[in-house]
Image (tube, rainbow, N blue to C red; front, side):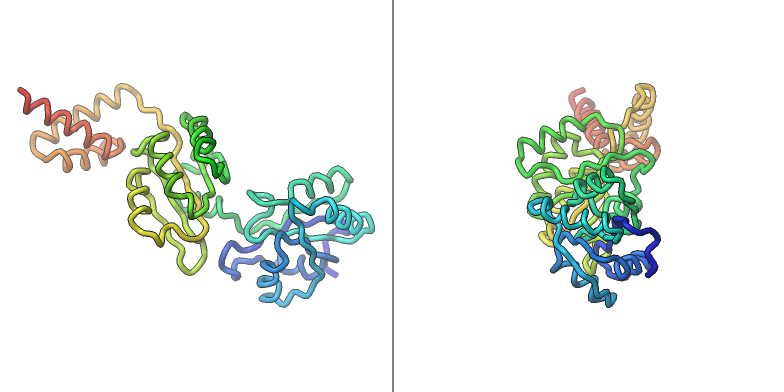
Length: 286
């Protein structure tokens, strides 16, 4: 056997879509352990069969974790090693397993990660939004009132925000995000990462909502929503953006002036366009 340590619980990351993303070490660990605890044995069988991994499996879910915990802890106490995998990605990240890891740690057993795929890391890595500081929220409440309450608590957060969302709730979530975070805040939506129909779309929240609403296919599969944190703009720079906008409007239409001013100043085009329309309206009055 090639197990690195005896009596060890291995937390093994698995692919989030493309089976080719499974790591070599992860495959070896799954082949060598005494038993593999799975979030869903039926789902995990596809991965195990693909790599010809013939192992004993057991289902570990929140509902049955007490009886399964007892069995896993028995294996570990006998010096046998156990692997735990979720349906996709890194276990415990919006998946079961926390109590298993905590119990194994409390009992003094080795708990070793076998790194690999993670939807949230994959999404932020290609989002173009600041990755140096981010906050992972996971799934918001299915209840609209609780979802809005959670968003309001995050409204002034400066870190990039990362959410998981179900396809049947994504429109409602985006609509609430537009109202609470502002339709002019930049966001990024990753759908079906590494799968056949994967799509990626970056836009202002208002534009993203309109895009998803117009195409039912964008409301299918597994979704990661990345939202930019609140940006502080200095008063002086805002005044300068308005000065630039006014100068450009002497020669250009409001939409073209706003687009160019946005590129020059970094302010959102939609916000500048509203200001341009207001300026134009004042000129008509006088």
